[in-house]
Length: 466
Image (cartoon, rainbow, N blue to C red; front, side, top):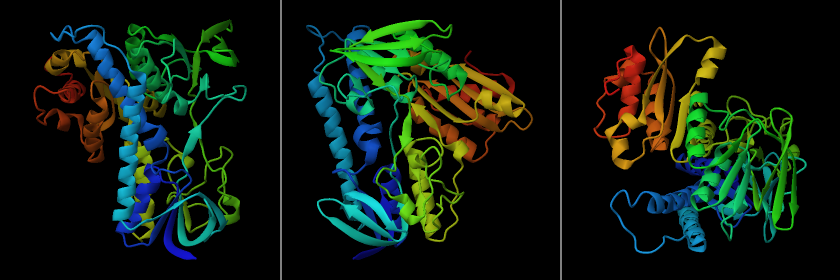
């Protein structure tokens, strides 16, 4: 039987990063993955493939709608070859997951393919082509999450689908109905809207991206309506039925009136659930809570002291970069170090176009906590860089403490917001004031000038270019 200092169950961003950090710290490390490729949901059927399709569909939309304005004339009609687009997406996935294989070899991490389940707190059975057993002083549970559904929906993976199937459709839907106005539904909805599908979004809450600042929701809703999305918020879906090649969705609107929506595909994107199937956690003394999450303390230790859990399978936002931070945190904790994670400074991003990103507290949270704050905003359309690229939707908003001027939250929607949010994270990590940021030189012309201008607006309402 092979023995290890650390065994990691699950090879998504949390798991493989944890394994690498353990190996870097001199621990003999193994990683267990039930699927044939490493990388988990994110690399195989999540973050990476969805971004590939978002980029491809964005190129198509630019060619159809914007090239002529730029003085680029294409002979004949611009057409979508969906099969080729999906193949390119898969090539990106294959290259990325192959990179994880390389990293495992480079760091001398033993990779086991099969379903890992606890025999006890220090022994793990791995059911692959044959069942083998390994021993581990410490185990890190990084089993991730799966798409959630609603109890009355039968997901047939053909017409009633999850994000996994939406990434490999054989045809462009005529009418895609998206249940759920969160990150996943809006990103994939935008992919197919750009390619020509009619898209209807049905959201239970009173706004899309309901966990983010209300100003961001309002602006993104405006952009989507301009792109001819049909947006139905405050709608409670009560039935989803497939009849032949048609899907019929019935929902109650906020007045309690029943509406019916018909489409040829229905994407169910109502969130994700922690995945522990087959883990046999009880054999190791690992407790789950009533939501199916692995219970952990502040050190991400489970009820079994030598077993830790990270990522989507525990409490908190289901984000790949949160899982990565937790993977490093646990590896360093096992090694006897004193790492730290500030969960308030883990950014959230929606990769629509315009992109949406935020870190820290929203206005709603500050109001609820009774914190006195000031706000400074700056519209993207006032930037020369935005006008040059024709990306004029959106704004940057900075919230700062009314007394100390310390930045408490940054919320942005616009071109490259996903990349720009890192500046806000750095500023807040070092507890910068709005004035600190306002006095830092930002290259001109760039999108990030909006951050400086919003900081000026938050400081003494003295933005320069508006």
